[in-house]
Length: 340
Ligand code: SF4
Ligand code: SF4
Image 1 (cartoon, rainbow, N blue to C red):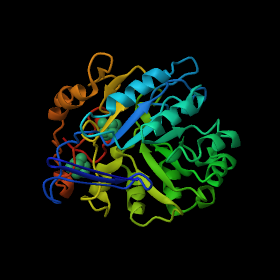
Image 2: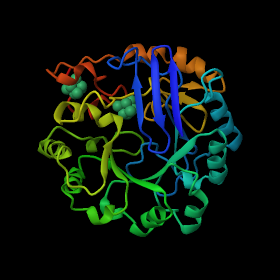
Image 3: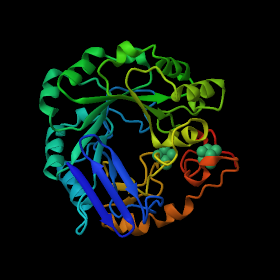
């Protein structure tokens, strides 16, 4: 299904099947300031997880809470703009979504709102039964990891054989950058068979994430970035918004076609306690409760403070400056090319 939205100077076309989006302002050369309706919503349906990954940015644990079904319905209804309709994409995360006791109902409710849910999982709970129950309901499933040797190929193949678009979310940090280089050199292609894309996520020192693992501007990162333009991975490669400044600065990626951090402008995060913030890494900064404020009051008014604070003060001589929002507002150290 295609979504078209033309509201004042904001123009947006999106294809729900491929996830491809196009956005422009008054003319094709302009960018709108922010979307009247967020394009992507990251919803944490729980902070409950039994796996205990050492990089978990939410410090999720087996005794943490779930979002109730009623609250989930309330979230989707709140996002539905009375005049302009609903958001384009919903990404479910946590915690571990597959440990939520009502995950199938959550997927069904999302479809009832004409939205295609995607979700991220640690992969532990994927079985044939799960695949049978989610196929046809999700756009894509992403499995998070930080070591290619942790991939359980049998689980990935269950998803792929079930016709589910399957991505790997690879959290890249100082300790595994050499393996990330090998991925781009094609050394792990046997593990990527049938995978749609490997998305590199920038490690953040949040939750259980150890600050000593933040990427630094060293020869390994330089080599990794050199390989981006000419990589040998057998599937598509992609990056989170946090990595975009480094792509803009050091690779041939066309800077007109990629967005640097767009949180609070085009995307938003809602946690299991119904707190709305620009990004899942805000850690309750710039955060407002849906129990207290209507969603569009938060989006249109409360986020003004955040938006006016974001200015690129980078001192580098850099061609990307015009398109780049500068360093991460929450963890500036992850933007390795930024110089104050
Ligand atoms: S605010 Fe920071 S952590 Fe969040 S998407 Fe932007 S760059 Fe990444
Ligand atoms: S303007 Fe600064 S932060 Fe942005 S891409 Fe260039 S060097 Fe990096």
